Length: 126
Image (tube, rainbow, N blue to C red):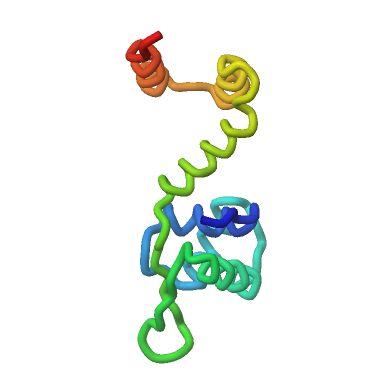
């Protein structure tokens, strides 16, 4: 699985949130609204072509004309796991507590997630 550029990731995140079968105009409008962009359809189309080439999406013609619908090939959770693994492979050389502190200190942690993390730590055998 290849890495995505920041812009490709914004488009892909939009599609993961929207779901399969969306068209260029729908993806452009959602991405611009969600990430406060002012991208033209040509710009988003370029990112979509790259996402198809990288095998994150497939594209099929929708009806008559040049309209295409995009289908998700790589789930958000798969890419997220890859990104987290790379993050910890790189930053995890520090004491793990320092890495986790930097991550959670910046992002914060709501109560339900904190309980999941606590339960995972409690289940570790030392």
